[in-house]
Length: 348
Length: 123
Image (cartoon, rainbow over all chains, first blue to last red; front, side, top):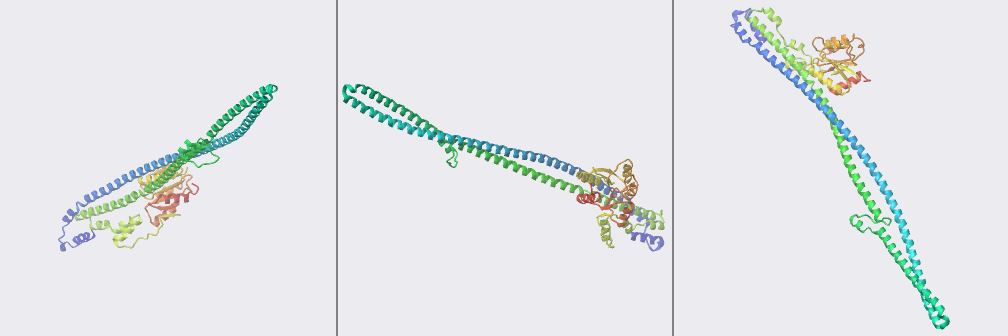
């Protein structure tokens, strides 16, 4: 542009040395303002569209943020509920353990008493055997007495009757003792069976043998063990779920942190808007200068007026507000680099 | 609740900063330029902190800072200038006008909240 102006200036000063036609120059530059208007319109479209996009991005990030917070809240509530459930389950399990423990103690005590009873009954059996022995001896004695009574003849007839009665008593006594012994035996066998009838249980549950254990205590122990295993399994599931929920909370927190960062980055739109407005302003300057040149070529503007309004790259530099604009300006014009040492944050 | 007044002619900046500050627990008042912000102060809005852009229509941020200092109860309220402008001369003007600090856009959420905690230690 300055070279064209120089030529125009020369044309005015020395028309005879140039065949430059001002009307051609004016005609060539005539479409430039409209061209600039279109470029300006495009730049403003970009500003408007990036602005709308930035607003939409922020709104969506805020929604994502809100959803993440709701999700984190829900998960925290779930984790709290599961944690309480796990705690309550542990308490119930501990209570069941105590209950089964007390039941085992009760049955061990009861079984111990039954064993003592069986032992006492076995001792009774010994007494019955002694009674049977006495009865047998009495029977033999009565038989001997009868023999002696027969041998005594008539004088021994009364004694023979007594001896016979003694023999009968001995016989009945032996029968009674035998009956008692049989009953004691049956009773002892049944009590033994109560204490030791765990064959069916052992086939289903393999538990380590214990001299203190009985069928009932083994069953109770089995129930307690199964209940404990189930409780541990459920507790494990609950803990895993709580851990997963806590992980979701951490992820949600990280997500909201990222969305906040992204919202911060959307500030680029304001910066690019200002840069584009700066470009639009420069296009406007070019437009104005083109119109001035056209006016000069058509004789509507004097050389002095034109030259007074000529734009320069230094004018453009004076309009920069950002460090980056000044740096780019310097790199494009080959000028001195802008001193970019100012801190980005400064408290006075 | 601590209230922050945001003054910026960019709707994007207002939305972005409002989102960050609201999430951090601050109440937020917004204004599109210095004159609007000054009107709000005149109507009794009493922010604990003002964050203002510099280049705005109707009333620029430095003029606003100067005028805001004259509003009742605003003499010691921190005023941070948040702008793309980076020249030292502008900073000096802002400082003379009563601004508390100068932040160059873009400013990250952590940086912004860190500066706020510096100028509002109890908030």
